[in-house]
Amino acid sequence: MKLLIAIPTYNEAENIEAILKATFDVVPQEVEILVADDNSPDGTAKIVEQLISSYSGRLHILNRPKKEGLAAAYLAAFEWGLSRHYEAFLEMDADFSHNPKYIPKMLSELNTHDVVIGSRNIKGGGVEGWTMLRNIVSKGGSLYSRMIFGCPIKDLTGGFNMLTRRALEKIGLENIISKGYSFQIELKYRAWAAGCSVKEVPILFTDRTLGASKMSKNIFLEAFINVWRIKRSVGRDTGVDQFIKFAVTGGLGTLTNLIIFFFCVDIFGLPVIQISTICFLIAVTQNYIINHKWSFKRDTAEKTLSPKKWIEFIAISLLGLAVNLLVLKALLSNFEFPYKVIAQAGGIAAGMTVNFIMAKWYVFRRV
Ligand SMILES: Nc1nc2c(ncn2[C@@H]2O[C@H](COP(=O)(O)OP(=O)(O)O)[C@@H](O)[C@H]2O)c(=O)[nH]1
Ligand SMILES: [Mg+2]
Image (cartoon, rainbow, N blue to C red; front, side, top):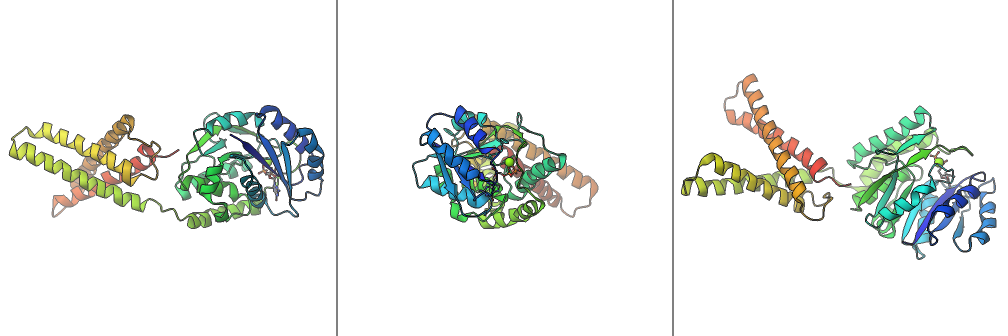
């Protein structure tokens, strides 16, 4: 895949030459780099311009008149690449925080995914050289936005991300509202919300040794608030519609169960317990199929039905049943009910909620 590496720079004169060399050393021949410089006072752009001839067509520069923030630089770089022949894009810092050695592995994952994230927050990944505070800010930021978005990506704040042209088109760059660092969060969340398949690849992030970070308290606060604006702007619902569909599916399953039970037991006189078990399995299978194809269609990781997920779904259904019975028992032994069916309704509500959460976050979970 023809990859364009976009490197935004602001005062990276100390790093730029070395990072370009280190990157070109490890990537395939057809990979190119675009440096998007905001007229750095330290002359970063000059250095790049002098190197262009020695990389024979593989190095480009986008000179921007003034400092407009990370988001604007990346958006301009993406647009530059989209209007040319590139099929994939990589975001990367100029400061060696993102080790170019991970690029080939990320690129290979891009054959089967729309977005590949260099992730510090999964097994095998991590951060080196950061203060505890900076670590907490980054991890906390990822967790915070994950929770608000209801999105399972573990490293939402990171800036080492690869996206296909298709992913950028699905996101619709004109929709992006972030100006600063929340751009990284927004880009990934929008891609995921638009249905892109996302893969996290572990990376060891190393703090810069040269030059200064542009991260500040204001930038952090901006991101903190922006997460809510992004959520509103994307307008992805929080799962209420999924819950309703899930409940309808459960109702249909119960109906199927009762119909089969009626014919087998009441008409043909077959044994109650065995038939009831079979009815349960049939209803649960029906629920699995409808949930896969309808309630969680948006989220399902697998394109097709799978025996593994079917078994998982049976397991969570049994768990839901257990919760139902436990709550029923607890309610009956602790409270006085005029009708026991009220306690059963409570049990069903609890069981269904547990079931729904497990279905959404385990069985049908995407990523
Ligand atoms: N063009 C451009 N690049 C920027 C701007 N702010 C930061 N950068 C670059 O974006 C990358 C990430 O910034 P950095 O200071 O390393 O942030 P940190 O890694 O979060 O500490 C670096 O390559 C910076 O030079 C900006 O306003 N414009
Ligand atoms: Mg950096």
